[in-house]
Every structure is written in C-alpha cells, then in structure tokens.
Length: 180
Image (cartoon, rainbow, N blue to C red):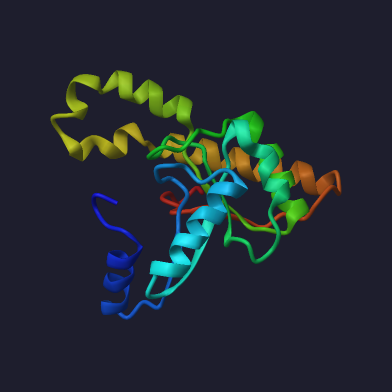
C-alpha cells in the first residue's frame, strides 16, 4: 500500500477507462488461504471504485486451500513457477497437483511460467552484472527458463487428461517465446 491501494489504483483504472480489475496474489500478505482471500474481498468491497476479483495464490504449504474454493469466490488460481514478489515457487513436481486441484474445482489456473532452477543458475552466472545493467534481465529470466517451464506444464496437463482425472483450464501468463 506504500505504492497504491485499491482506492488509488481503482481510480487510476477508471481514469484510463478500465472498469474491472483482477488482483494478483503476490502481495503482502500473499493470498493463499481462504481467510486472507475473504479479508481482501471485504476490504475491496468497501474501497474499490471498480468491479474487482482476486486470484488465489498457490503456495506449497497451503495447497489444500485450493480445494476449499468455489466458483465465484475468485477469478482463479495463480501459480508462480519463477520467483515473484512474496510468492512461493511451485516446482515441477508440485505443479501437477495444482493443475489437478484446479481441475476438480473448475477454476482456471494461471501460471507464471519460468523455471526457477534455470533462473537461479543465471543469477549466479550474471551476478556481477545484474544490479549494474538492468538490460540483462532477459538473460536471467531466459528463453530456456520459459520454454522448459511451459513444456512441463503442458506435459503434466496431458498426463492428467490422459488419466481422465480432470479437464483443467490452464492459462500461461505473459508468454514470451515463439516456442511456448
């Protein structure tokens, strides 16, 4: 809220002609429990000058909360496979569980698709340059990081559908490569 809150950001959206805003969960606190989701909905209902919804955050220690969600409670579930503000990384093994859970609830899953392991290796590789030259951001969060993560998501989704467990709705946020 030191940068903006629902009132200020809602007014900014309205001034640009946007009437609906969907909030991401990578805030402080990270919205990964139904209690936090309900608290944020209560705040929004009092202060947001626009239509709103929220994404629920997939966090390793709170994955069971996804199954408590009902359609209409939120816009969907957001999973971060690469690090983001206050988000917990969902690794290649956990993503299948998250996909299945979203399939069971009928909620869409939106994935921030970057391979955390590749990002960590690139951060080490470019450590001396990273803070001095922001233009190398694309080298740290590389094509390989995006492609490997999206391939993993696709393969895990195919496995689930082949097992006829669920028919999940997956959205890859901000696809950045032709291969993806």
